[in-house]
Amino acid sequence: MKENILIEKTCEDVWNGILKLIQDNVPAQSFKTWFEPIKPIKLDNKVLTIQVPSQFFYEWLEEHYVSLLKKTLKQELGVGARLEYNIIVENGTANSTPYVVNIPGSSSSKSDLQQSSVGINLNPSIKNPFIIPGIKKMNIDSNLNPSLTFDNFIEGDCNRLARSAGIAVANKPGGTSFNPLMIFSETGLGKTHLVHAIGNLIKQNSRTKIVVYVPVEKFMNQFVDAIRNNSNQDFINYYQQIDVLIVDDVQFLENKQKTQEIFFTIFNHLHQQGKQIILTSDRAPKDLKGMDERLLSRFKWGLSADLQTPDFETRLAILEHMMYNDGITLHREVVEYVSHNINTNVRELQGALVSLLAQASLNRKEVNIELAKQILKNFVKNNTREISIEYIQKLVCDYFTIPVEQVKSKTRKREIVQARQISMFYAKDLTKSSLKTIGMHFGGRDHSTVIHACQTVNDLMETDKKFKADIDEIGKRIKMNLV
Image 1 (cartoon, rainbow, N blue to C red):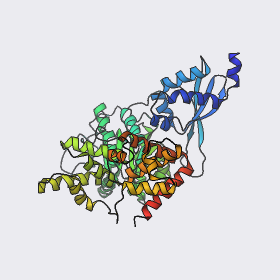
Image 2: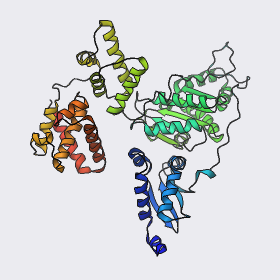
Image 3: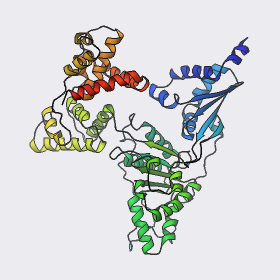
Image 4: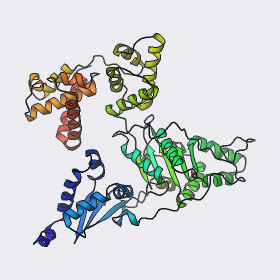
């Protein structure tokens, strides 16, 4: 009887059962990142085939969740159940379609790529392009900033995938599928910090690895010098002996045909030898123009991970980390005010904090909200009218035709709860009030209620189109009435 029940199950039924079990055993963010994108493809006897979006996904699941997957699969299909993966692989060219790679589950059978045996000392007959002529130096300098590490790279939703990939690369350089690893984002969001952190961790793990960080502009200048000195081959040979090459701002290679050709030669050699390549750019590989198609396709071979603008909680954590490192204490409302108002990039956030502390020190004033507002005028675009929580409550309640008193009451009616959560969401996003202050405006609720409300609104915006349309319309009305 039990066998008949198993035969009637579809792959969707089995996978949905597995997901329910997994959801109870992993954090919500991890479930959303690593399990929601998976699609069940086929169930053949006790072999379930699932489709994952990349080789990176497959390796991450096998490394971090293989035990959980085996346990839940056994619970759904019984003893002898197995998992297989379908991986969609991009060919990297515009005309070709993706193809599928089938891989049986179990990371134990994967062999490590052969590690380089090149030592720290380079061939003395090859000229080092980092060395000023006349100064002898046989050991290569990595050019890494030792202060930029994973310990002071604050994790948030904005950078979780890139940071996780960076740690995986640092622990197994050249031995993962994300080679090259491309980190891209707008300026000031932490690309350079992250690649330095990867390089520093690799050096910490292995003193024999040759790790080099080079901005692409310096690489181009070195190439020009090599042409001038008729030492092109020395230049190529030098870079081909590196174990981990980190190249910052590759977008500056656009329309530099000769430099692209030399970089293509170095890239190919390193990749074929199982060496790790890490790149940064101000945009995704598909958006780079003036690039040789062969080079562009190689940029797409591994993993491209973006860094997004940090949300309020991440900005707050960054500021608190900076203050902790410098032994500084500020009032919570001041830190929240800065976090609310500096929402562009991390550099501006750091600059605002430095300016605030400098002014307080020079003028011997206490760092309070008034001083923060005065100093941050250079960083913050002023509204013609300051937004209040009461104003947001009234506008949201008008939109849903609900009395304002209702959102302050203890009622749990669905429409009231939704209006209350939206009001809290915009109060947190558009005012300088602390979470505690916001909660007090809604019938004396605590800060955790405000956090839960904001998270609920964010989640619903991702899954409910009508709800997102309501949120966008309310946002427009708030901003229109401020002018």
